[in-house]
Length: 251
Image 1 (cartoon, rainbow, N blue to C red):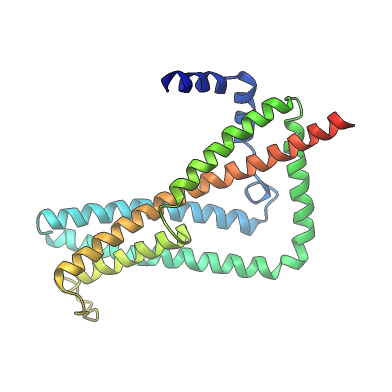
Image 2 (image 1 turned 30 degrees about the horizontal axis):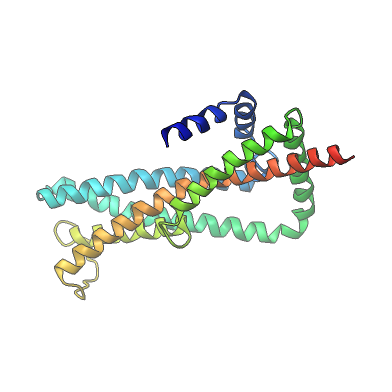
């Protein structure tokens, strides 16, 4: 088994294949390039920043939750936990509103810009295919197999969570934020929230832990999904490049 793995590792180290993978690494579709509209670029940038903020916020909430389990929080820590809970509700709400606004504008301008962006997308794809024209069909196919293997591995990891990963992650984050506010609002906050006494304490703690686990998995899947999108595009570009090679061979 180690011998087979070593043989595969040596094959992957082929200079041509590595050059192709490096070149593909800088390629992206029209949605991620300068050809995209200002709204698309703005939405993509804000979405990325919100996701990073969500990761940070999620980590801070887990730290406070563990701190609360180990020992009671002091007055200032409780107030900070309440602020984190409020932020955990506001952040997903902002992300959802941005997504809705971007979708409405995109649908509104779809008829006006669909043909233009379709042509720009084709030109971008053809430009990337021409950059791969210097490589042989065998090297392109080898690089494609490596990328498809990477996609398969990411899909396997993504299957840990069912549903739309980014929405699920933000919903989990909002649920944790609300739970955090409910936990500490009655102790120091002058703002009174509606009481919910439907759950017993053991079940309440179990559900809180389940939400944390679900949210953590969902955030990991969001990160993996963003990477898989690029690999899928690279594989499709290789499909076009290989098809062009075959056409030139038969011509």
